[in-house]
Image 1 (tube, rainbow, N blue to C red):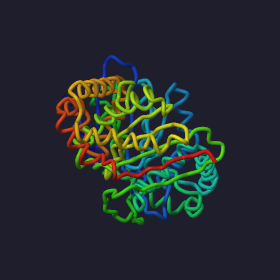
Image 2 (tube, rainbow, N blue to C red):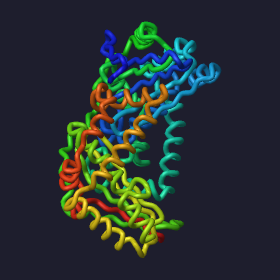
Image 3 (cartoon, helix red, strand yellow):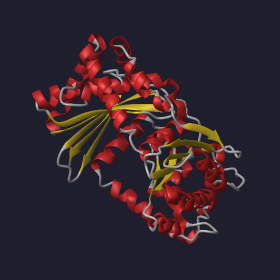
Image 4 (spheres, rainbow, N blue to C red):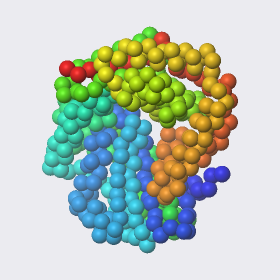
Length: 413
């Protein structure tokens, strides 16, 4: 049962609140539909760069004052940018929320994006990109998703590219901020030791006087097409001690949420835990891989199912062939009731463990409110428990083709 309250402020901002009287802590998390997916290609990396610049002050709040006010009250703040969203959270003692949330709102609504801070912070982001290019797992994954989504923002790095970042200007970022950081694009989630009336009054007091939105370039709508055949990429990297194999399949976005839940289950069946199919065969019995895992990533417009293995370069072809065989068996023979029950139990337990704290709940509610509907946040375990082996077999046949996928291999140079 969904136990939070979903309210609308007069200006259109969504407020989600849940009172937990047993905790002295409260978490406030602001989710914005302003991730990398809304960037036009010429503004690649703008959403993430803006996340940095949000904290560089407003006409009423000098740079650093927000962090100081949070820290001196024993609080913690954080910010994350993804493809489908950006979000900004703070955790504090309940009695201090009234002193800290107005500061966060001030930053989000009235960021000035000063030029001197812009160029200084751009160097920080450029260094972040350079460090990622030294990470072979990051390089492999970026190459993989680029082959899956060649013309879509999902195929680009959230950080952007060095070339595009050098073209960005403070004025362009101000336009991006003004366009997208508007109440209809925002969800404020407050969970913890604060009652609904107090949370409502504080939200109404803090999130006021939004600036009028301005126009800015919009991303081109890209129709998603299925993978046909094998999209193969190979990287040779210096100082790489162990080869990697990364495989990916496209899956539906949030418009087919049940398919995503089923692919979550298939991910557990294939390569999550010692008795999962790929781990048991390729790691435990044949010892062809040091590690292997699978993952389903739900995204708003198009989701991704991946299998990743760490292994010796001479075993790459053999392991790929064996994964083919496992997928064929999955499609032909389906899965057993015991495999289904194990996967259902594991995912339901994971869900229960991930909804114990105010911080976890704000993330759950904010995520679903931003990419789908908040009421779906608590439907996950019921959906997972309702699957049959026959339905999962059909999903495997539809989405996990052994002949249509993208693959990236990394070899030592």
